[in-house]
Image (cartoon, rainbow over all chains, first blue to last red; front, side):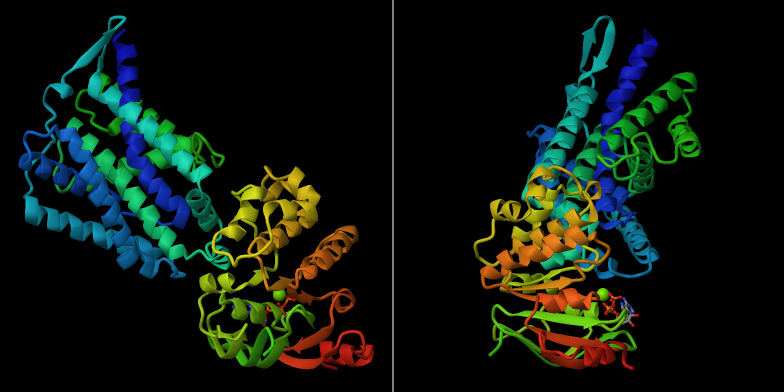
Length: 288
Length: 232
Ligand SMILES: Nc1ncnc2c1ncn2[C@@H]1O[C@H](COP(=O)(O)OP(=O)(O)OP(=O)(O)O)[C@@H](O)[C@H]1O
Ligand SMILES: [Mg+2]
């Protein structure tokens, strides 16, 4: 029974991991850029949420998600317009990698400067301890909410990409950025929106993760690693694959912790490593 | 002034010059063939017109508007539309979605999904399929359809018969009658000279980036054209 509970909790945690991955996957899928600073942006949004929660103690902390998402979208838009678009047409694929790496280092140092290196977390009070008892299993409300939210966001994003004109243009731009120009689309503008969307999704993951576990300005690298493992596990470019990849990682982590309480993310990383050896194309290898 | 007026156009790839001092005009509703051997510079010329190759110098007027420095994403709105060599459809969009891409920022006009489907009925059958599931000829129809959805005043077609079965080529060329009935002008870039001449009023021949011959499509002396084509 305790193992069933562990698996369920792992799956719930996986929804959150899926959220960490999906923003990174979106940017990679559309512009073939690995945004190394994705993790730092997530941490930044968590700091922002903590700050807002301190400023408005009477407002439920999770409501802070709304302004954080909005600001993250704008930050992503500007980050792309001012910085990333400059190198995206470079024939050297290292250029965007180095640039976003540089941004991640700068962001980390700026966060240390502003917020200090202390460990923080976002306190949501009772909600973080509340749980449901189902058939003798104890399931946390907060992780459950997180998974439901993640699944909803995946569905909404899927609908936007599949059913709207904006989504069609995004997919066409991902296919052939030069040919969409013949249809009157300016790829750079599409990239701005996509990066905004990516950081908004990352912000949701970043804030929810800050409820679950504490963070410092140095947590970005670990968040990026999870996001990266999620999308490689799920199959690069596959949408639902990212959610599956997240769930696989979440389960591996919690099972690992059960076996060895000091393991941390070790077993999740091991799963990732084994998967790379056995099935490098990921769980879902076709485009979805 | 003609619909398209090009004078002294030069196009470069870095240090390499691919088009030299090109003069070229297309009248309203006219069909013009642009022929030339491999590497003559035909595609380079078309891409420079629509703004996909931005290393260009010289004068280009479309409908009286200076487009010599206009970025590609603004050109489509004027009704200067290219069907690119190799079709270059969007692989993760269905055929219908590919066609709809032509409507994103288009000139106003009469082309609709319905009319494209009437022109190429097979596309309606395959509307939910992806380009990879279609034959080369059907893909070419989709590429032409996508361009038509933008309501072109001048349609630039780059090697639309390349690699297609003869019946397909026949069918696509027949569709030009319908397309031109709207008053749409066309430029036909082809290596199949006979085919292009048969469908055009005037011809330009390109040789190593320069116009080597120009004249009436029906009255051009085949021998002179062969010389102009191969440079012998
Ligand atoms: N991207 C590029 N970079 C450098 N040189 C190029 C590029 N594309 C074409 N060229 C050169 O420019 C010249 C003209 O090429 P272009 O593709 O315009 O010829 P074309 O007439 O369309 O030939 P084809 O009939 O084979 O399509 C050629 O010498 C070619 O090698
Ligand atoms: Mg060519």
